[in-house]
Amino acid sequence: MELFDSHAHYDDEKFDEDRDNLIKSIYEYGVTKFVSAGYSLESSKKGLELAKKYDFIYTTCGISPNDIPETRAELESQLKEIEEIAMSNEKVVAIGEIGLDYYWNKENKELQLEVFKRQIEIANRLNLPIQIHTRDAIMDTIEIILNTDFVKPGIFHCCPQNKDLITAGLKKDFYISFGGPITFKNSKNADEMIEIVPINHQLIETDSPYLSPEPNRGKRNDSRNVKFVADKIARVKQMNVEEVAKITYENAKRAFNIK
Ligand SMILES: [Zn+2]
Image (cartoon, rainbow, N blue to C red):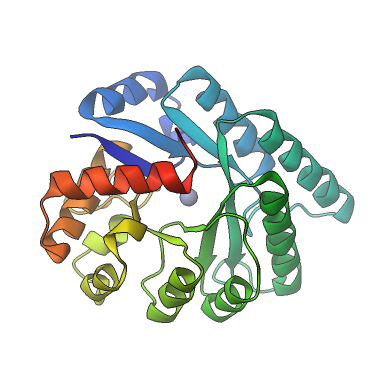
């Protein structure tokens, strides 16, 4: 069985001690493609280094709502550089993670909206999908999704389990990427959310090193745990896990335009 982890962060310092060995173990385990996502200019550069080093690693670049630089001049120069990096290599498969986060930052909503929209424009210029991070900003995210034209259907990373958000995404042909939280015992509506997303629009992810699924909740996460996310979807959709792995693998290749 081969698995595709649509979102992880292998540039994270939690992997500094064993990064290369771990990446090899993950591949040998059967996670034969994964996206190491950027969230800042710095991590976007590191992600691209990993993607250049391993042919089965892909990357995204972008500035997350929690990584917007302090000054206008720095922001402008970073946006320019993000576009240049994205243009420079075909292993950059999306602009992300980008979006809105009013949980960690509620003081700069206008700026977050601007930076989000401008990176959607970058994605559209480069014919790339966006990978969205959204937290405590459902209404504003829905409004942008429904009122923007996208050249490629985007991806909700670690999609919040919110029916209105998912419905809006599906209206625009987006992919819904589920992660560890759907396996949590206190996750009230996970089954319903998995049910409403057609299997050909689902992706699976870990967000490693964070958000380990059950039964490894609380430990450092790595892409092998994406299997537990596939297991959960298989149970809800009444499919076998091999089938879920295969379909989400093909979905991810389609979403990220990987041959
Ligand atoms: Zn992430």
